[in-house]
Image (spheres, each protein chain N blue to C red):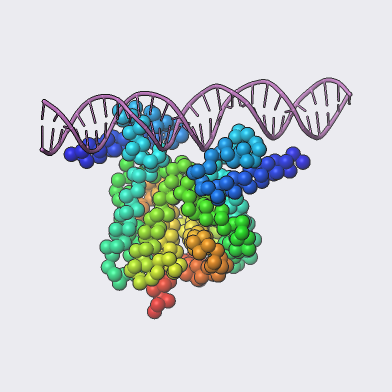
Length: 198
Length: 198
DNA sequence: CCGTTCATGGCACTTGGTGTCAAGACGCAT
DNA sequence: ATGCGTCTTGACACCAAGTGCCATGAACGG
């Protein structure tokens, strides 16, 4: 029950924050304004979010866990390019399905340097997780071999490129379609190891 | 002459900053300490650098311009994978040649979240520049086609992976060698467009 | 009904970063 | 040498992000 109350406060905080930030831009809104709108104290805000950037980036943070989980769930023998395509497709398709909410946030992040920086920093973590998962799938050493990190990074490059194009087109382009296109370009590198093994 | 004086102040600032930051860590050093060591005012510091992070990241910022210039200088008909390999190799080889100075800075950046974030943010700019240059070389539309951005991002993924491995090995591994290895994995994707054209 | 626990709010404080202005150094012309 | 713009700097005040600390109050269990 205390759990639910926490969730409630957190939700209200992100709601107020995203509304204000999307409306007036990241730098023009102070944390004091956000907490006033949400009806809590500034001190409480920083108990829920590590920084002003976090309240926005957190909103997309689940995607990282989602990609990782999806990759782990793919069948063991699947080619890396196919497994990664599916892993990345799920959250991107979700974006396309909820453009109303997702698009403003994505655009805000991609257009605000401070937010982009934090977002990319988070992605480094995703990349390490994906690399570890790939290494596990292929029986490689995540630290010694270059391939897992390269493959994870390349997949995330495709992810970012799709997100960027989707954002720039104001949601006009279909994320799922863009993802497929991106992976047809990138797949040869992702399967490089598997092909070498053959 | 005023130009040289500016350069002198800037150099002294970066020198003092890097020494202190490498010694005690990014968060444990305040800007006031840096400017005291350099003998200038805090206000002057922020006239030279946009942020505390910048004084470190700037140190590597030239690499971006270097990569771009190198790519532009490659022969027109060269395959993308080869052109990008050379473009990325130059600054990485320079790192290997000056490990004494470069390694501590790279390690500081990769180990400090705030610095990593700013560094990656800068790289987004590199990525756009490289994508534009690639599009120009291949007669593509940098905005409409996915390939240029994917290729630029993939090359930078290789770049980052090499940097990371070099940093983690405390400089033991040879950057030039790592770069070659990374590009043998990644090359198939980089040449995907060229092969399609054939 | 009492004590514990936990989230919150308020407050003081540090630090990064900016606007403003006056003072000094330099080059240049008279 | 004198006077005049220009450019750089330092000092000061100021704002906003973020943290440590402690009192308070509400929910929960005995």
